[in-house]
Amino acid sequence: DAGVIQSPRHEVTEMGQEVTLRCKPISGHNSLFWYRQTMMRGLELLIYFNNNVPIDDSGMPEDRFSAKMPNASFSTLKIQPSEPRDSAVYFCASSLALGQGNTGELFFGEGSRLTVL
Amino acid sequence: QKEVEQDPGPLSVPEGAIVSLNCTYSNSAFQYFMWYRQYSRKGPELLMYTYSSGNKEDGRFTAQVDKSSKYISLFIRDSQPSDSATYLCAMRGTSYGKLTFGQGTILTVHP
Image 1 (tube, helix red, strand yellow):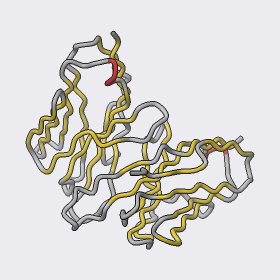
Image 2 (cartoon, chains in turn brown, red):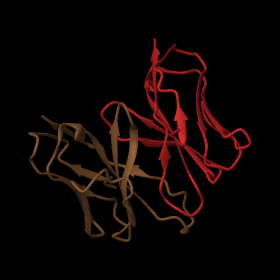
Image 3 (cartoon, chains in turn cyan, blue):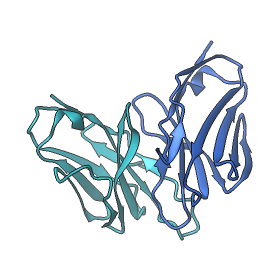
């Protein structure tokens, strides 16, 4: 089975440019998470979708960040305009939602490493 | 204060050593406790999963949860160079999928 697929794996851009990160969750999973990982702050939850609906976006740092999930097999995280402090590894993860007899284990993609110059 | 505290290390041990990794937390609503392992330039993968207090063993790995002290541990016996990775504790409550992660501990097992 294919895991969570993220693209691009690496992105280098200049300050002020728009960045779009993409994620394809595992088929059949109905929860999707975007995390950001830095050395200083570790893994931080940005936003969480359940059945394509955003449930908790309290981790989105500011209005420059937006996320969408137009269907069950695709999600995007957009940063506009990007800033150097946005440099991090962005992970997408998917899971079966709680209440379906499962542990809620998160399955992570390999991440998108973003560098904003 | 962070909800979950984890010493980032780094921790360096010789092959065959027993490794102890720990996290403390402040949210008494946390009921599910997990350890994820993350190899360099990869995403985290679930290693151990525990519900409420107690111990769980899986091969060379043992997870312990002490809810009264709000303290969880992961022990690795007979550590191997292939165990070199970042270990992240994670936890959540009962009704919400969000996981709160610790900072991660970088472990190196040298031959």
